[in-house]
Image 1 (cartoon, each protein chain N blue to C red):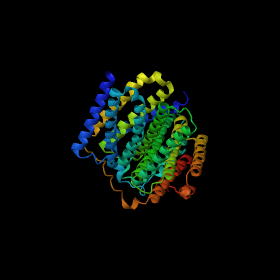
Image 2: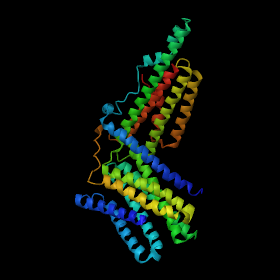
Image 3: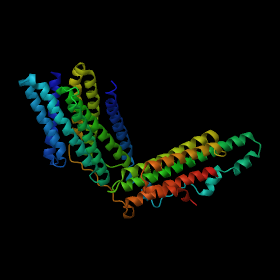
Image 4: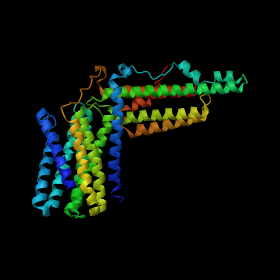
Length: 189
Length: 253
């Protein structure tokens, strides 16, 4: 029986892959990649920042919270935390959407290239998935604790992301290592 | 009687497919695919002839032509790859290498098993080789579907239909072949109907999608500044690094 199991798995997996592909292609036929409004954005001109840095600092900073908490009104504090959580989650969604646009632009631009390298593509894909995972963890932390004092949870996700990133750097070819070693230098300032 | 009806229906569908391609003049657009269909048509006629005239030889004859059919099935996968990735040379190169490696692995395993004399009886060995070949085709098709899905490579209706029909046939085939190897002759009755029915379902899909020539759409030309692959990869990596830094900075504020 165990010898037949891999073949069942392969057969079933192919059916699942085909069904998902058909469903996805039906959705994309309604809004194909080429006709999307953001298609004119090239990779070089890509901007990741969902909001100006000043506003981002305000969302996650403690200034407003210090002011509201000084009012000693429990209802106001609760309302502030609810609204600030919603804004922070919207910010995370916007950042993720921007990263997805970047990957879509990358895929559209590289798919016709004759120089396509599978390992390099895997590395870019792993980098993207890692970033999405980081965003997901931060969104979970915001949902659990609110955006003001993320403290240890953020440090943990940050460290985890850093370790996973090092794994990706080791697992895939070194062509891009200079990019990643210098990644702290790419700021949005 | 029912199995004969299924058989005749399959042969009729094959004839429809070939006649349409001949009349539409697009048979030479997919030469390997239509060569495979012609082989299957001839195979069906030969099998029917053997079944009626020499029923004692039918079983061994069936397994031998079935093996040839499975090998030619690899050519269909090749044609699908060629049709889908013809305008995408990098992806096509990757796929070509993968295809050759997987086929070489399957045949090596078969040769080693045969050399070692492991369970050699014609039908069983051929059955296992066919199962392994179909599984290899399933892996290759699955890989192709994922590449097409990730890179959003547009497909024409013909290649889309070839891929869907053959993919569904291969997946059911791998499952039924695994059951046939596992259960032996007790599964023979179900196998007798399942195999041709799944084949006819594939032919129906092909009849719908290969009625006329629908070529693969030409991809839009990308801006010339982004033609260099290394530049593109560096720009994407830089964008992702910026995104990561942006998020971390926000969290630390």
